[in-house]
Amino acid sequence: MRSAAGSRQVLLGLKNEVEKHQDKCCSSVFHDSMFRMKRGRKTNEANSSSSEETTEKESKRHKVIDKNTIVVQSPDWANLLQDIILQVFQYLPLLDRAHASQVCRSWNQVFHMPDLWRCFEFELNQPATSYLRATHPELIKQIIKRHSNHLQYVSFKVDSSKESAEAACDILSQLVNCSLKTLGLISTARPSFMDLPKSHFISALTVVFVNSKSLSSLKIDDTPVDDPSLKVLVANNSDTLKLLKMSSCPHVSPAGILCVADQCHGLRELALNYHLLSDELLLALSSEKHVRLEHLRIDVVSENPGQTQFHTIQKSSWDAFIKHSPKVNLVMYFFLYEEEFDPFFRYEIPVTHLYFGRSVSKDVLGRVGMTCPRLVELVVCANGLRPLDEELIRIAERCKYLSAVGLGECEVSCSAFVEFVKMCGGRLSQLSIMEEVLIPDQKYSLEQIHWEVSKHLGRVWFPDMMPTW
Image 1: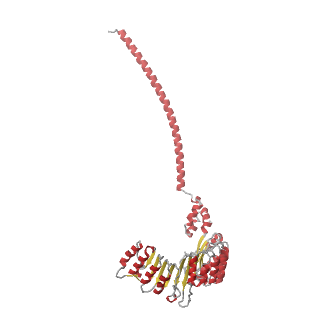
Image 2: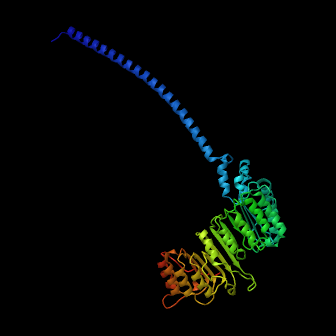
Image 3: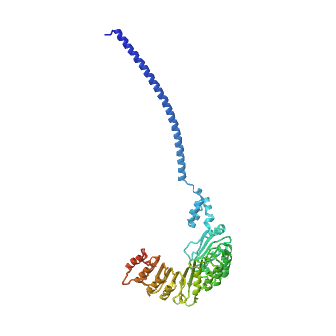
């Protein structure tokens, strides 16, 4: 056994070792703690710096978002591009456009841009004779003052009063700075322009003819225009005139139309009364120097039965015309009484669109089937109480291009009508028949006919119904 002194030395040695180990551990812990503290301080500083940068970026981003939000929520309409405002204005009615022009200075500038005033329709109505709203006089003054030189496509729509026609002429006479491309004079009721003194109307119209050097379309139906004024038109617009519509102009002679036909080599569409149509005119339109017409409309009108004598156009004149213009649409409107049809449909004529505005006999419709091989469209307002079975079948047999038919106060048996549709087939793109026209027979009832007709047309078809009100 060890002595007490030896044990004490061992214990002292162990104590020293423990103290040394503790000192070493404390020193290590201290250094580790100090390192961690320094590292933590750097991390906090870095985090603090990063946090500040992030906060600044977030602040900037929020500012951008707020700025964008302000733009969306509070737009400045006055800063819209004028081209965009112009496009919007073009879709607005005139009154709404005028109200919009009062929003701001920018919109008011757009309101007066030339593009908005190239096309305009003057509506001239008197409160006592029309329920339609007229163009305000102050607006008319502004147009003449600021936009007359911008006008290019103009029409005048007047009611039946003489005052409205006079107002239209007053405006025409002030268009001294204009250069119109199209002009239309439209009477919504009876032709009020005919109530004016001829000199007054011609004087106003001549202003446009002289100042507009590029007039291409002129519609002057039911007006007192005359041959001298047409010569002025030709002298100033012979190279540009393409459409001339002047039915029911009693002061124009065939010589006036010949003047237009001979010198307006760009003419494509012509509309006139039958009394102006002549063999000489058709031959002039068929000459080599004249361009090929695309549309020729003839109105055959009689107001007093038995008092109007209708002449006959020679077949050779029609043949020369069609040879020169083989694709022309020849449109004829007939407003005659039954006894006045004798000069017509006696031989083959090249009519393509045929409209009967008054009652027409079975005999005349039978002649249509024999003499109109180019017929494309046929409209019969009335016939009487004799069925048109044979006449319709003949038209279907001879008129191989027929694609549109309309029947009003007529009578056709259901069987004949089905046979007519069967012969014409799917080329009948327009078929307007009143239900009262169709007479049921042993083969078809009104309930059955729409199925049979639909089968031959290749589409669903029903007869038209007369309104009950």
